[in-house]
Length: 74
Image 1 (cartoon, rainbow, N blue to C red):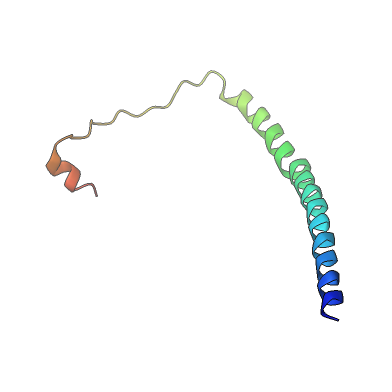
Image 2 (cartoon, helix red, strand yellow):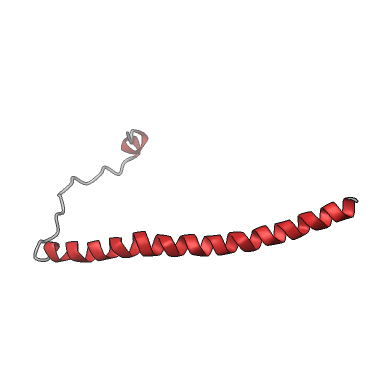
């Protein structure tokens, strides 16, 4: 009787593995269609508004490189 239960368990694990693979493919396809593609399209439309604007860098003072300053990082 133990071998029948074990055999059933092995078949169940194999079936569950195949179902998980299919489910993963379906979920990643839906994520791609409903999240990644619309975000890419929105990013493309926002990029047009940023043309002509130069970089917005802020000047910063250089960090000290001595040993005492590195002991007080925060």
